[in-house]
Length: 369
Ligand code: IPM
Ligand code: MG
Image 1 (tube, rainbow, N blue to C red):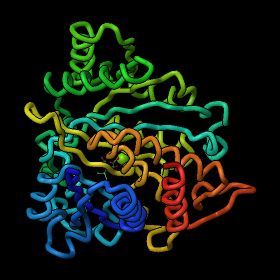
Image 2 (cartoon, helix red, strand yellow):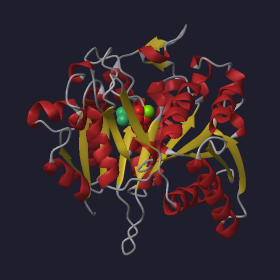
Image 3 (cartoon, rainbow, N blue to C red):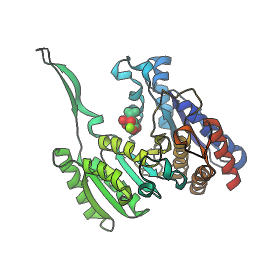
């Protein structure tokens, strides 16, 4: 059995609490199913800054580059509001994305049947929802230069961010969108703002050309990103795969998260290009929810997004499809039984903490095997 090398970066806030539940899963899969996971742990975000003045150390960055996959918790919190911009907690995550070249960010928004009533939208709008937001993750306004605040000298300052997309960046994310659509309902909706942005004009043109050249079997539509946000809350089931840039993807995926009942439900996978020789790709898996400092340390955080991110890791990094399916089934089944963390709580359900939710999912996974 080959070893599977995982780097765990729990980070700040509820990150470590959520990661603790994944660690239980890993230990169980090693002990009971001989899964061969080898884990190392590192620091990212505010805790890394506290330890060595950087949001991720070079040593941990090297570990991330060498791992088969990185599991990431969350970063940030009010404690680090005053730290210099270059070493703020989020910078660690952005460095990982950029240096590992994780350009494709998959954010599936699935509404588990048991949670249709937990969404702020009507149950019929979200019941059975299964869409995938594909966010470009290494380009756009997150990384474009210049990125600065300049002093205009007349008592005014100017803040500048730069939105940049080159053809190859759009082509490769569009390619991933079409490939993924072929494994699903074969539909892609591309979102940009070509009505005000030159990068949007190019985005639309390149997606259209990529489609024509290689993927004309897939149904392609285009939508302005603002209208896309509106359609996501009006009738989200019209979508299958949504492909969009880094900033729009950040916003639209938070919107999509709420369709599923709670921000605590949405996992994500950030993938690089497959290696030409081995076919393996660099990858990082993280919940979309962030560090939630307001509830950190209370044992009430929902670990499901973190656990579902591990399921994506099994699927995309290790091709453990059966195990990934089983883990997702275990999550659904525990929810069917009425177990709810506080964020999902509704009348007649049983409220449990982070640990009890994790334990229940581990036990259900074993029972389903
Ligand atoms: C996300 C987060 C990050 C982002 C932050 C923490 C930098 O909001 O992954 O959605 O903006 O990409
Ligand atoms: Mg975000």
